[in-house]
Length: 285
Image: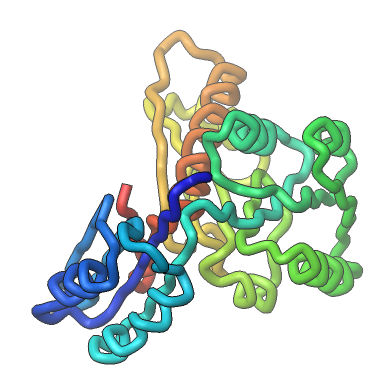
């Protein structure tokens, strides 16, 4: 059997004694720290900490540690959570027609590089149903028009609740979520977009970039908010454009960096490495 392993994440107003209190608590309760990261933001006055630990004493349980930690959390007024590191979060993935990011995420899941349990794939088109079937993941076709958007999002939300999805990944889902749904998914929905925004908007952005002779292209993975493509950034990736590349080469290169940035952001979230810090994030890589 795999030895128990837990992840504690917390944030609170920065003050002396937090690290000492957490370390002493874990030692007193028969736990050994395997990994610890902490950061105090001088601009916001917030403190962030992620600790991975293992019980080294008989009888230590997740529920017991969680209950015993309550007074410590109350003393420092922490926002905190405790998770079993071996439990894979349930993930719902959304896609439209372009499936390169979906395919990349599913392959990484297959080989064990992404510790997740994909519970559903949702699309407003039918293009990816064979890919979903090849991984034995339920596929849900939820087409949407301006007139049917409220009803479609109601079905989507019902599916999220029914599957118990803890994270929603927009893997090139080319529809804008309503403000209401974005609010419901605050901090647990990740989107990917090409890093050319706002310079090249609309259709064929990589062709626009080619016509302007750009030297770098990139992609940004961020949390979804009601402000389109302006949510807290989790991860970014860039690639250099050579003088002899054509527009189609930029498209291919762009798809690569989109896959890389999104996969990293999803992994960081799954491993409880991302902390919201106002309009920004703290990521313990």
